[in-house]
Length: 150
Image (cartoon, rainbow, N blue to C red; front, side, top):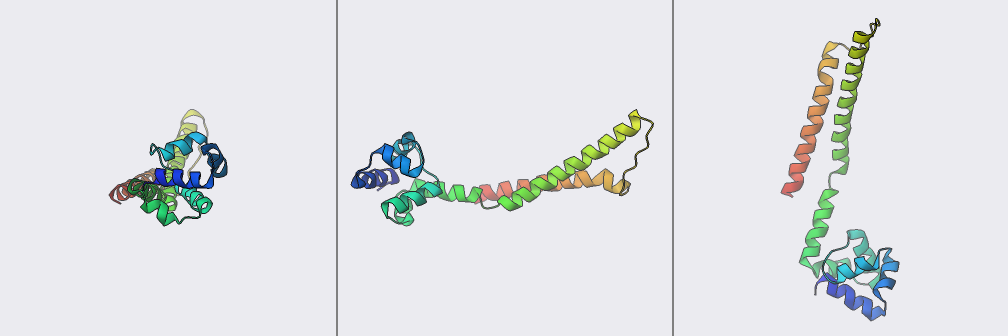
């Protein structure tokens, strides 16, 4: 039995309308209708709530529908590397900030009579932003490819 049929059967067994089930799950009635008709699938958090409401195991709900199982696996893969992805994004942003600071100081020195120096040496200011941005971009790219492979 596919998920939509199982959901409809369990809902009717409890004597609930789609509207009543929707209220219990904090979703719209249209969402419940789409799930029951196989037009869409809920996320894992809703599947857990459905499991609790109807006192069936998550396994019963997932294994009843191969497409739903694939969706849940795909959704979980998107969350597999969030901290690492965030770390690469932060590295990239730090590189952008360093580049902006360097360009700002260069513009300030060029447009005014001030001679503002950059602490840390020429190598740092010439290559740090480039290294951070390239490293962050490559790291994000590797994660994206790994996600596609999985």
